[in-house]
Image (tube, rainbow, N blue to C red; front, top):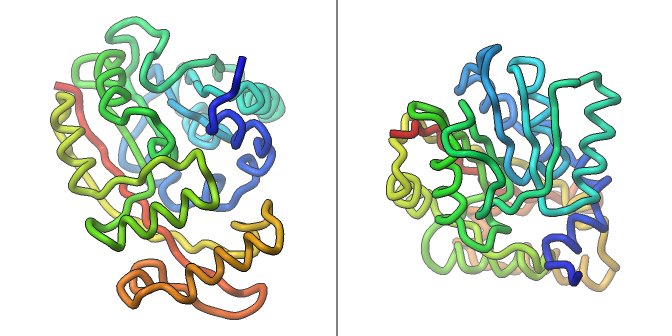
Length: 251
C-alpha cells in the first residue's frame, strides 16, 4: 500500500516527535488538562496522537484513553512508551480522523493537538468527533493557526516547503466557524505563541534546505516578521509559531 505524505513524514521521523520540545512540553499540553478537568470515570479519545503526549498526560487522570493515528510507526512507539510508563489504561489503534472506528456517543472527551493542519478534511474530523462524543461531552483541540490574508498564506507556504504533509493551518475565525457548524458550543478559546529553535526545527534537512528556510524567515516582509519574530544568530536563531486552543461542548 502506498503511504500518504503524512504517513511517510511521521513514519520516518516517529522518534523525533517523542522528544520534540513543542510536542512533548509545549504550554498547550498542560492547558488542555487544566481547562478540561478530566474525571476518573472518563473515556478519552486522542485523535492523531503522534508521539502520544496528550494520551500520556491524560491517562493517569481517567479510566481509559484510546490513542489513534494513521502511522503504524507512531502507534508502535506510543504502545511501547505507554508500557514503559506503566500506563495500562492506554490503548492504540489505527484510525483516520475523518473516519473513526468507534460507536456513537462513546467518549467523554475527544482531544487533538497540533495535527489538524495535516488532515484531508477538518470539517469531517469535527463531524466524527461530534458523533463519538456523549451528549455534553468535551472537544479539546489545539492546532497551529495563522493570520488571515497574505501573512497566513506565506506561513502556510513556508511550512509546506519544509513538510509536504502540512496542508493548511487555519485562522482562529475559520476554526470558530467550523466548530460551531459541527454542532459544538465553544466555551473557551485562546492563542499561545511557542518559540521554535531553528537548529532543532530544521535538523532533519540538508544544508541547502536549511539555508532556504532561514532566508524565508530573515528576508520575509515586515508583516510576516511581526508574526514569526525571527531573531538571534547562529545556533540561537529562532522564530515563533502560534497555536489556537478551543474547548467546546457537544450539544
